[in-house]
Image (tube, rainbow, N blue to C red; front, top):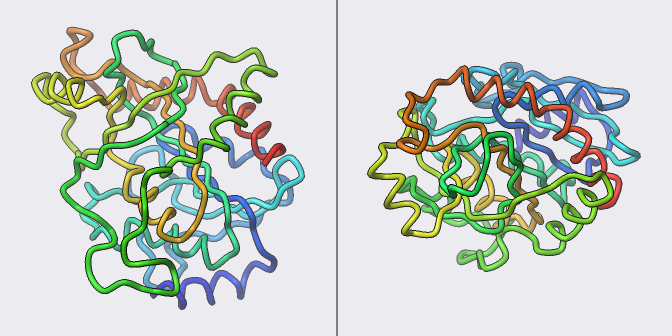
Length: 267
């Protein structure tokens, strides 16, 4: 399935793309900053999953950002949409076959660390896979990676250093911490959030972990960001809403775009 998807994309788009970018909820407007954009809708790609989540356009954008050739996902695939885990990570394997060597992944997340404020940007240093699934279960595809890939450096320390250097140059303050990935689509309970804090999580969301596992399997270096779009369940005393997540994403989108553009130019 991956080979057919890549063949279709290459029939529409030429060239290799060294950097991949995944845009999370409310952050899709970065795609408008890409120069000489070419678009491929997920729905047009053979056997490719279609993004149905609110705020996710559902297409690839190919072009140039700050002098680098980029392949951008304007909308991702989630487990809660009903897809199998292999569908969730199919875009990562397509990226690998399109030449991507570095991946910037973003998401909107609930803040568990009580020192975090809504609107903070967190560099992901590590993750906890709480989905109960792993995209590498089953027969290993040796053309992508080894049977037992190491996740000790799932998020590249070198790319994280670049992120902090760029943020300092832009007078931006970044947080850092551990992301815990759940399946959703229900938000977590207050009891779960208390348990996640004990486990060492700083932010929680419904994406990213499978993508990062697949990227590491493929030998792609990863830089991850969580936009803290809300306080996690039980911390604000209010009900969580989807609109809150999208609103904060829109409010912080310009800042995220500036940061990612600066980082792309450095890596």
